Image 1 (cartoon, rainbow, N blue to C red):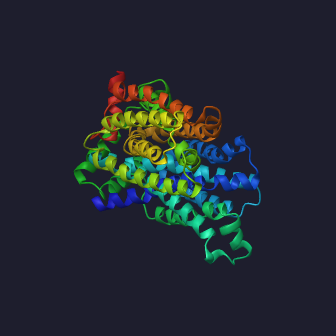
Image 2: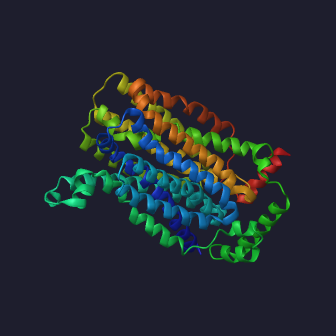
Image 3: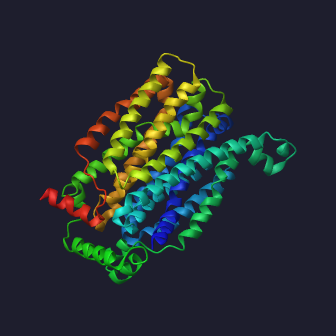
Length: 459
């Protein structure tokens, strides 16, 4: 039973892998695309953030239809968007065409970013739900790392003797316009995601919300005891009978505080500056004294640290809980941002010292905001409209990411690197307050117990 639920979580977490891969693969293409299409600073930001606009659209679509048509069906749709985007970017004939296909890929990211952790939370037993949902974040970090390796590999391949005598489309994709092969490399994992999704069942809690209790119970019994499945089904029936989860309850009723917590943490996680490093890492590291080739290699190191410290969350999230990981992680993030800003302000040309503090930032994000946010967003909302409610909070993640993606070139140019990092650090102050003073601990509770907590708190 345990292996069954782990397999389901692994398959759905591949949506996180594609999310991370799509997010990071662009970092190696920015300079090449900017040069080929002669992009201004604003258009450079648009190239990065256009996919994020698509992501917001994807979240809206997923939120509108996943409660009606199911989590699995919408995940299948996301896999198709990933594949179409990768193929389309490879053969784009203009900058505008490239933007269109990046938008389509963004829609896939948006759908997967919301529904992958949501699906996992709805199949997971309460005792290890945090660990299983955190697999999604681990998959994101692995996707980011694989994208960094792929960028470095393709860059080296483009100048190798093997490619020296190539001609035609091969030379165009792998040498003269190498960004095409970088963006196109996402095709294989996208198709794998599609095929594996066909083998998983529909979410049992979604089925229960549609009155299909017998089928829901039979699916639950695949990965938990009969007694636990009975308990979960009875709790679901009780929750559904209360009629407490209309959309108005999320905006003004007993779940208003849960909504505010989710939205606030979602935005603050992105305004920490994580995506400034993911998207613009090579540029930032170059300004700190590294050459482009070394800077891309430095991003591989960032990716490795990101993966390793996500394991800390997998290890401790169901033991320590959500609040301690967030508290210590956000404090570490703020210290790192301030320190990097000081190095740039004092013009300390020591790339290794700069990398040390950037890696500290990545490590702290990887065991806190990275995994814990998705765990919280997948578990704090009511069953009847969990998809719609989570889409609102997830959309805030992508609004914050879009803001950072679009504005980072402007911030680096006008506030300089030191001002940019201090700007991000300021937003960690309200994040620390929110986690310590407002956020409840949810470890070890079933989704229905968490829902009842909000109802009882309001009453």
